[in-house]
Length: 138
Image (cartoon, rainbow, N blue to C red; front, side, top):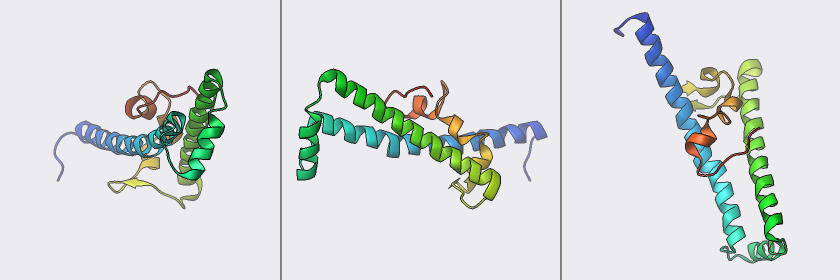
């Protein structure tokens, strides 16, 4: 049997549930967001060697520095919007249909969050805490 007051048990549960949200957020930032941006940086630096990528690099090199910076901002904004919309749909599924669940340590992350899509953009959100790259504000 769990020991401690109801308040202490509730606080321990909240902490554990925040930890699973952070585990998922860190995974999402490192394995999706950062990998996409790293791929873009490799293209930007001309480091990829496959024929199809070489053609893409040649096309990309036609843009000047200012245009490339705009392209990078558009890319990061698109990534963040896509992740936001995906998380919103996961939350919506939990709230309405319950067909799709994402679990970390057997805990449904959409149940533990008051809005998965909101976990991205705050000053202590997943982008700020776990991504190597600055985000756009939504």
